[in-house]
Image 1 (cartoon, rainbow, N blue to C red):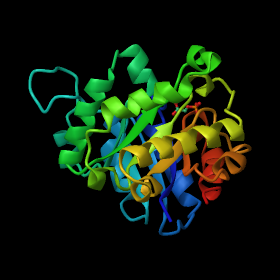
Image 2: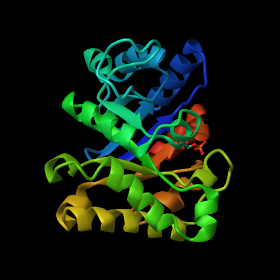
Image 3: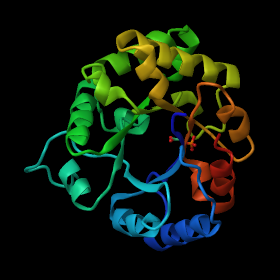
Length: 253
Ligand code: PGA
């Protein structure tokens, strides 16, 4: 069975102390994950070491960076390299979140560089894709996400694409309280899997975990995660509340 993942995306929220308490509360629930299940906390960079040490003794709990820079090292004040992440044993990094694309002008080709740098250092990217509302309204979302995958991922080998993690996040559903319907989610996830199968093969496509992101809550996770091609979620708002995120972890298939 491919990996089923509950990924928390704290974004630019919580103080260090609040983050520590949140992790303690979630880990204190002692949810034992099955071998194919995983919980990942994408936390602000200054909290990575603390998060790493909190999850160290837990089976299948991991820390992730929310971003990395698309150059190896050098005079890029304020940026964080994959080498830095590797040096503190961070094994995951969110790449291309829609907020990064929108507010920090990240392009598909920049994201391809980030993916390459991560893979070089054995850091698994959690690659985000998804369409804005005007594209959904125009009905061209399938073509839109296909270009995102093609330009940022399809230079990878089949071996590199195996077990890859993608998060589909319709931008119109992020932080809006509006989720895609289960039909819309399943349809898009199946579409993403089919374009990966077309580029590689269906065996590779079947190993790719495709998470849904966009207003996943404790009360809708079951329905969304229940879709055949949805392999968990990338969760923003609801990951900041221990009881809610605990419920979401418990909902993993
Ligand atoms: P949300 O955020 O759950 O608050 O909609 C999801 C995300 O942007 O990762």
